[in-house]
Amino acid sequence: MSFALPSVKSKPEIPDNFHINEGFFGVQDVMTNGLGRAKCGVDVPHALANSESNYRNNVNRMNMTILRNIQGLHAPLRLGMELKSAKKIGRLPFLSSSNVMLDALTGRDLEIGPEDLFDTPEFIEAAGHPHAVVERSLGIL
Image 1 (spheres, helix red, strand yellow):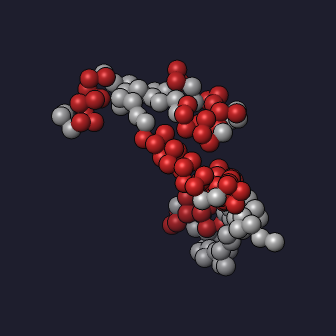
Image 2 (tube, one colour; image 1 turned 90 degrees about the vertical axis):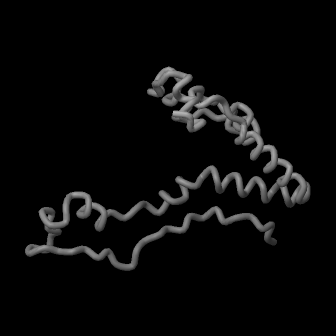
Image 3 (tube, one colour; image 1 turned 30 degrees about the vertical axis):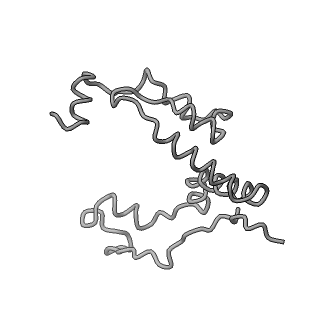
């Protein structure tokens, strides 16, 4: 019995061939290709890397699908409309927004993650005079 839920299984993306340009001794020539190119051709991302980078989107999609199956189409549409209006709430360009309303709607206010500890306002390196920042955003400067 399918409830039209998205798949939870990760789908690894592994290239068929690696296109390694081998040098004289079977090793990439770093002098020709550079250091960045040597690692790029050999390194294969982990199978869960794609799944982990899209974790929040996958959970959000699954919650919206469950909500649609339980309450009908109006519930995810209303919640999506509220999320869209919460994302539009802005402040002046020199003030950072805490996104409290968006966090409350998505359930992020109940979680503690690394971004909560390391992205505190006192460590943000945003400098500038408020009047100059606003005038630049309006295109006056």
